[in-house]
Image 1 (cartoon, rainbow, N blue to C red):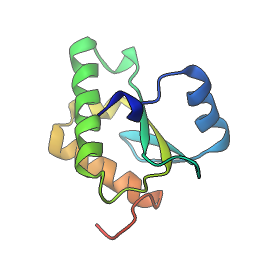
Image 2 (cartoon, helix red, strand yellow):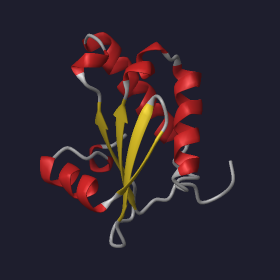
Image 3 (cartoon, helix red, strand yellow):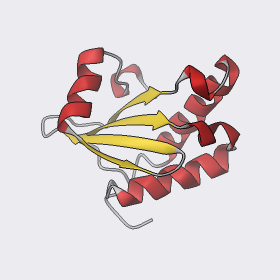
Image 4 (cartoon, rainbow, N blue to C red):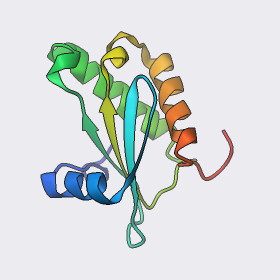
Length: 115
């Protein structure tokens, strides 16, 4: 992910939380906000210390980023996504993480075509 595709500032996180919609499953909560003037999607990640030590948290973030890279062509591009990992996400491998994220993104109707 390029730096321009990341949400880092607290104000940007708060805007998505306050104005966006949220969908969830057991492992992840995703907040989505459509932005008309934006050409590329941006993602923000939140993985709490309650989930595990730094190694586990960083691994979850890598899995999420890679999943969004893989799904880039089928996701709506003019959106901001904030992904919050829940405790059960710590026990998932990459393929389970991807499957779980696809599930929650389908609930939120974030795809441009059928997957």
